[in-house]
Length: 326
Image (cartoon, rainbow, N blue to C red; front, side):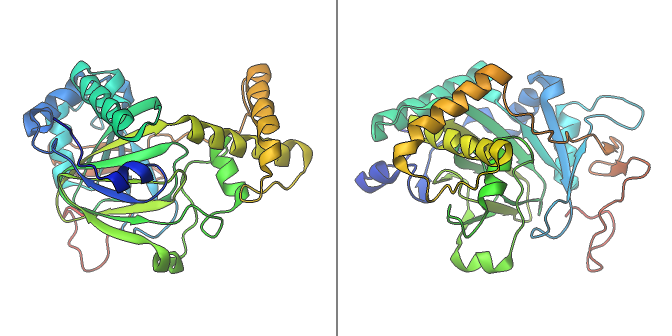
């Protein structure tokens, strides 16, 4: 039994176009409420990420990392974290769950076996992330270096997908992401929406898009559960190394390479250069500033954020009552 609906057209266009599929895992016992709580509890504790964000989904840079603890250091278990998501403004991220949980690993293996069978692609670096997020939470405009599939399990989220061309980011910006100088967030222009594919992603649906296509997401007024599955194909890995090499050429030698106009004949040389640099130097030291925790949670008042001293809290709009989940 297949997990994803396929047509001859989607099989040919996979990884090359924005594609919407239906899938049959939304009702899987793996993702029931109790199963999710148990999965959070057995997932490596230090790898659980909790974020909060501002209230305008188009504003760049409003994103705080939090702790999985109360102010006194008491650990919040899976049930308490789930309650915090339900009542607060949080984005719970469990990365690479397939590397930590056998049942999820089996599902991930089945997904990529099917993808390989239907499309003929050879999939590398396959990572399945679990996203559990609050009503009306959002992720701002950004792009990912790997290929991505976004599977919706619970709730509805509005997904904005933008073309992966130079009109939506600069060469320097995408190079900075590849070199780890910056995170994946990008400056946003509302005019970009004129060329966006906009879709309300529902349970039982999956979206995938071309490599490096920018996107942003806004949850509906309900808890969302999604799978963010990242992977590389040989073609995608080649492309990522071209970006990496271009970034090195710009930063080390003052050149001005263009991803769109990169001569095909030079690409093998760039790949060798990128691989050799990583091998000899351990990779470009981009000095990306790591996120540091800026808030704790209150288990007695689920969803309440206790900001650290000196951190400016995000203030809800006047139309929203204080303490209401947003």
